[in-house]
Image (tube, rainbow, N blue to C red; front, top):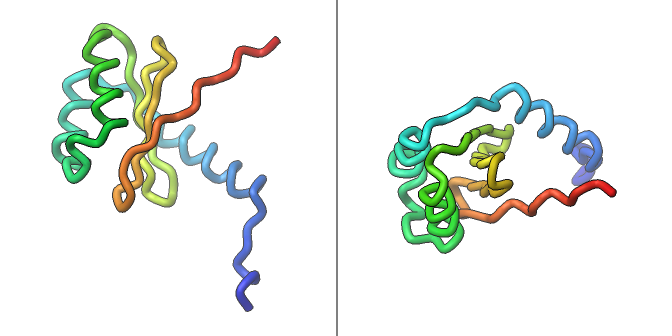
Length: 103
């Protein structure tokens, strides 16, 4: 049946959260550029990629992070600037939503 393999959203989110925690690692600015050139070069010129590159170039001393989820999505994040993007190698780049400050 079509829905036999259905996974509820809560389970899916937990699996992705766990994958991010397990694969999360810090990167240098040079490593970010190398990853974008070698692995994600098919999307060169993508507006989200360009926006992220401008942001990290403006803050080269900041901390950068990378994580991968099971579907092959690559997450790149600059914690100090609270800016991130994710890329699905088959689809392109998308900007991550900014965190909302808890009140």
